[in-house]
Length: 520
Image 1: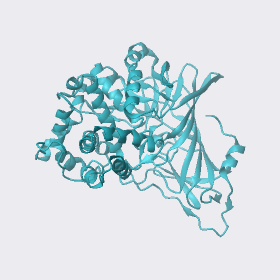
Image 2 (image 1 turned 90 degrees about the vertical axis):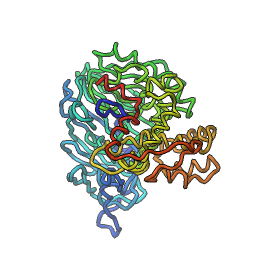
Image 3 (image 1 turned 180 degrees about the horizontal axis):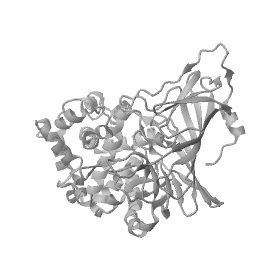
């Protein structure tokens, strides 16, 4: 994700009942003498305790959405079939859902009782679900209404002038559809979007087919690689899909409002060269396709929805020396954050620190660094971030332990972006450029399609470098004070009042983005 503060950018196919019954395995009458207990209402994430749910792991979503009319603000309806495996003898379980209503719920083909509790959909099957056995749950005729894409950084299911999109990071995809809405529980997806003829439905993953009948058009997409619910992208409206020449076998498609296509598509073409750039840096692209989705709105952020990064027209109106590095930021997320997801939201620096790192590297490699950041080179930039690091830690918490808050921007804060990139700079100084490059490649290879923790990163860094880096990285990632910078003994951390922290944050969240004020 990239963010704008005060004008500155910071950072399927239907599954047959027979097949599903086969997936479900055996069930035992609830009256049997078995100790079955409810799954937890949340995975206990330090920052989002009720996000996700315990007692099961999802393997696949078959999501079907229907947009009745050509009206972006309309209430939509849908159904979802979720295939999962119980991780305990499960008497009851929850899904995250903050939409309007639910019609009915079936578990293994049998009607289940359900209730709503805040953003939890509480489901009680007719028989308990045995540990380690597969089951499936279908939620029929749920409804959801989008929020307007105006205001202070809207999240979730969003209406624009041309249709709707999804911006679910970190905790609002379940505003649209029931899910286990935490990146720890990734799954594959088949997504069917039905719209009135003349509109277009698009989603994360590879396009399987489009059919039209009775004035309605249904497009089906399959994301065969594991995806966190917060990264799902679902578009419906008066959009066009533009397919570009593949890059190394990776299909490229861009999605833009039809009325703005001639203006926006030309600016997106750089993504082909950027995909080649990132592949050379960190290895094979982890998905089947990629592209850009641009909406006519003032989001206040860009977002790395899987295989289809989301931008607004304000950003796409910026000069290339601003837009292009930010596009690399979102592209880098496909490896760092999408393919390798955070195990908890405290690990979000792994996403944002890495994406900021490659954003800066790209600006340097394309000789636009000074124009983009205001600094002569990356060393000068990181020296400035280093000087402000104690202030950032005091205000926002250590890099890998951001302060909890009701505001999403306290989680996606300057210290996980610029501070996260600073940790990577320090690590490169410590282990050398060759081992650092090897670590980056091994990280996205070892944990491809998985969720990984900060401790996983520390362990792999130690293994690749041949050094015990736990003390070093623990200080950098969890310390309240900034450690000495390897190779730069003259660098000093500034001591300043809290009042100056905001100014520092505005500078280092990427001074690279100050120019955005001219475009919003």
